[in-house]
Image (cartoon, rainbow, N blue to C red; front, side, top):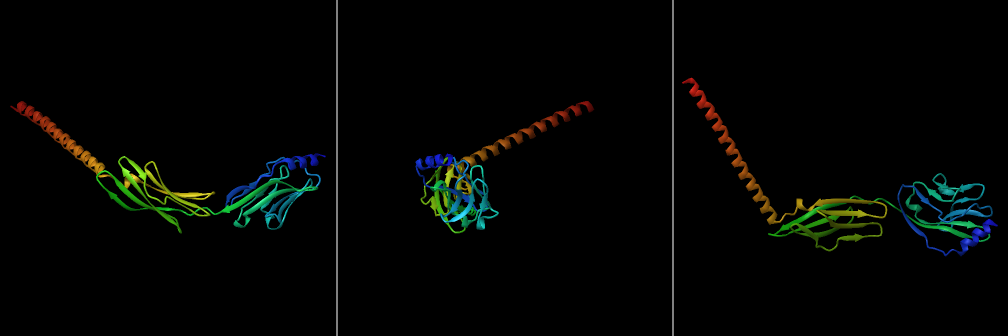
Length: 252
């Protein structure tokens, strides 16, 4: 009776598409049954891979894991969720949880994609051109098999991204370069990992006005240092002179 009520409730529920999940190669993955199932006394509960292959089966009495999934898959009796251990690329595909009985019912469905972590990136400064009030900086953001180049313009104290081609996407990852505060960021990412490299704009790009200001500051600082040094020398000479004169008076 209870099982019939559960099937009736499930049949009234609007069917949904599979939930797409991404997992890094070598990690564990939990595929949860989010709908209430309860105890199955008639029929079986099974997880299937790509419709045909049965990963695991469970009923009121016991659970069984099949084929190559033995030792690296586990089905939980409480809610019938499936744990896949140390997933591989070959584990990518569709996983469906089905109650078999008088009428088959899907209670969970996932589309799993197993990905490798992305490769490291390298950000290089190709050229710098400066004028009296601005500076153009061209950079290349690259991985082992892909790269993008882009240009940034700085009008002290602000910088902006002026070049095209700031992003390059494939089926497996995205390579992008962008400006964040005072840094140019080169980022390589997919759904499970990301790597980045950065360069500080001010360490490569200075306008003439900034250089002149810095030079002027250094000059003023140098003059102040000289004045202070001369003043100290005069003071020391005066103290020595007074001391010498007093000594002469005592001798007379």
